Image (cartoon, rainbow, N blue to C red; front, side, top):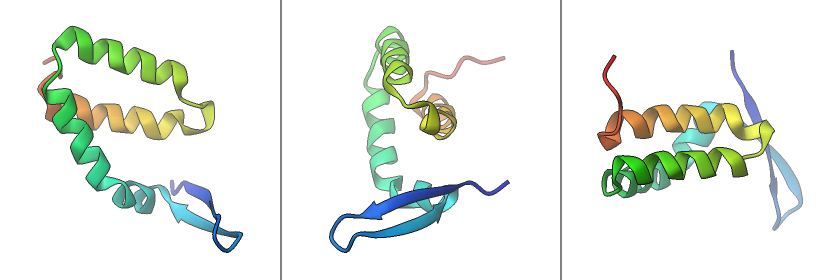
Length: 82
């Protein structure tokens, strides 16, 4: 399934539609920085950050954010082994 995100270009007033993949790639540098920040957190701080982030994330973007959590879990060292 391809998910498209609508973004408004404030300079020109145009609406841009992006796939979720394009959106992810656009923010890849910030996601990498986020992983580094998460690596420096204790497990408790990391879980608190995730909780606070979930509480402040809009319903419309929660699916995308949950995918970001999967990535930060995996690469931050805070993933619990099954």
